[in-house]
Length: 116
Picture 1 (cartoon, helix red, strand yellow):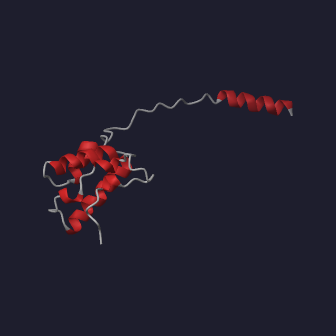
Picture 2 (cartoon, rainbow, N blue to C red):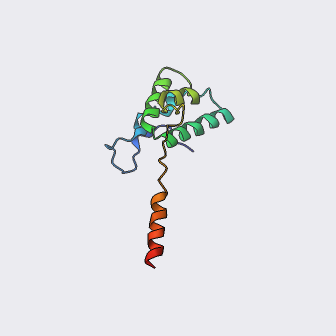
Picture 3 (cartoon, rainbow, N blue to C red):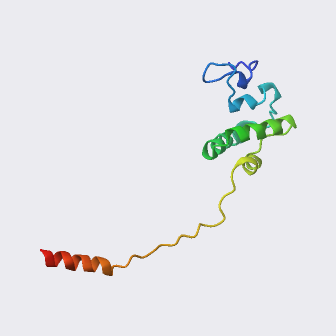
C-alpha cells in the first residue's frame, strides 16, 4: 500500500532532508488530478519519463507539471514536450569535405620504390 501522506520532495537519495532534488518541486499526491486513468495515464506517465530522460530536462519538466497541476489541469505529453524539449533541427548542418591531392602520395610511393 502506498502512503500518500508524504510529499515526494521529502525524500532524497543522499538522506539529507535539506538537499533539494528536482522532484522536490512536484506537487503532493493529494493535488493530482485523477482524470487520466488506465492505459492513457500510463502512456502519458511513461512519455513524460522518456521526455525527461532523453532531453535532460527533469527540473524544467517538474516546474511545468507543477504549473499545470496548480492550474487544475491534466498533464499532457505534447504540451509538456512543447514546453521543455529543445526544438528539433529543421535541416542537417552543411558539411564541407576537402578532397586531398593524391599526387603527393604517388610521389611518395615512387620515392620509396626508388630507395628500395
